[in-house]
Image (cartoon, rainbow, N blue to C red; front, side):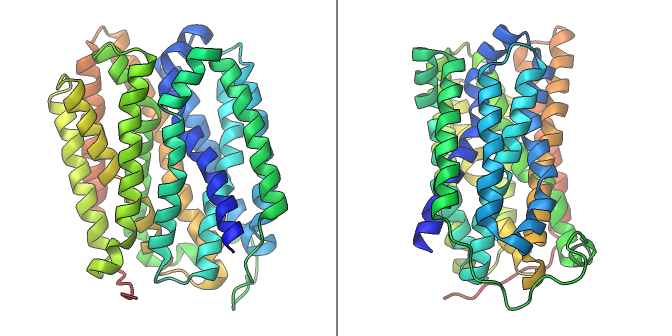
Length: 397
């Protein structure tokens, strides 16, 4: 299983890269293809919308045929999407390319969670899943300064074609090296396309609003708006933007590793997530109230959002605690679909919001103040619902 974990982590590096690279090249992409802020929101949102729509059938495939075939075959869509993105000439080309990339990345993290759920048990689920998120989030770092330097050297088109080649290598590695975990004690029964059994688990319901907002807001900030914010409010060029983005990326990695053992350390998953979300709200509120806080202050605020907002692994572990083995793939995929689907909805909506105020002549600082304020309000509302969730107290092994 060590080789299987390693291959999945390597593939997840690519998935994290694809979630984040657009923030670095968004101004140049908009200029070359003729995109406005609403278009950029559609491009970014296409990844998450396609990713989310693929989650339920992927969970069914995991329960029936396992992750090796599912992950390796679908990753070829990301290869095609990267190539299409590199050759983009019309506004719909990057949208279609990002949708293909989203489909290709959709099974990667879920494959890792499925393997962990079948081989490591519930007690260590948060630790191992957060560790994979942490290591895989190095893809965020590659999508910052290293990618910005590559784009500066060879252009964003050639950079994306190079990524297509790397993605093909990753798909081949999964096909050749990944091993499916042993089947669970209880196999899937009945209609494999039925989600009713999962939806009847009421413990999941208060978690869904947070799933629809917590990671989606983080993805929108890191994957799209941090770059334009530093370009338009502070006038930073590509490399300086990449450096600022990289700070947030490192904070996300650190947050993933720190969150991993906290549920067992404190004996609670609910309150670990709630505390981190509250700090994230505070940082978003700071940017909303003072969008011209300065480059250093804004970078720190984004780092806080990245570090404290990385509750992804613990939220998934909280949900996993209430999932029977025979619907593990479908249950985890449903929660992941909420998180990624929320991002797919939020990014076009946020793009339309930014585009509206830009067209109305609002100053960039005022526009981003409204954007970050909206994020803070949405996360606060979701957190209020999440407080009614039943806690899951893991063993302190």
